[in-house]
Length: 256
Image 1 (spheres, rainbow, N blue to C red):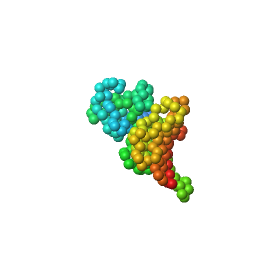
Image 2 (image 1 turned 45 degrees about the vertical axis):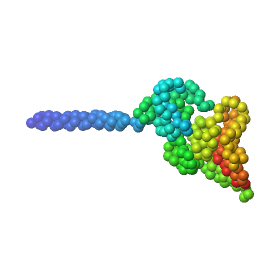
Image 3 (image 1 turned 120 degrees about the horizontal axis):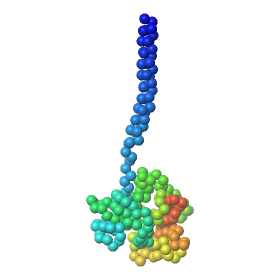
């Protein structure tokens, strides 16, 4: 009888040990399945968009060259979905080196010159510079706007400084042109040319004494672009330069 009881107890312990062993083996499997479920989450969309900066609009072409058929003209400020990017500079248009991106516009697919496309949404005419940069900071937090005053009591000055997180001169030029009314007669200057060049506004209004665009270059690379405008008792300077990984726009007004 004792032998039978011992056998029953032994079987019970063996059963309990097997159950515990199975439970221990199943636990890591459950954790592993949870890890796999987390890893299977679909990543966020990487769709990219760019904006048209050409004042007169940008042509959408059938193929990636400037001689192919025109499919449409995309207005200034249009937001385009970029389907594929041209990484190399394959052409130069208006002094800007670039290539043809494949983009989508109004249910059409085609190619557009990326020299007139920007990651920054372009300002509309008469847009306040401070408000524009504050809106820009929502997407590009490193963009900045600073306003300072100086000069003397008889000749006060006011300077607005904008820093844009880009190294592209043409992006800064077109933004400055819209924010601070650089006359449209002045196009983006070619990086190649004389070390110092001054271009006068052939359509200067009579009330202005000065309306010039001055370009400084070194080894066929832009150093500064400065627009100067002066009338009796009032003058402005708009200077574009590069500062580390930023493009800097300085707008200074002087009252005499």
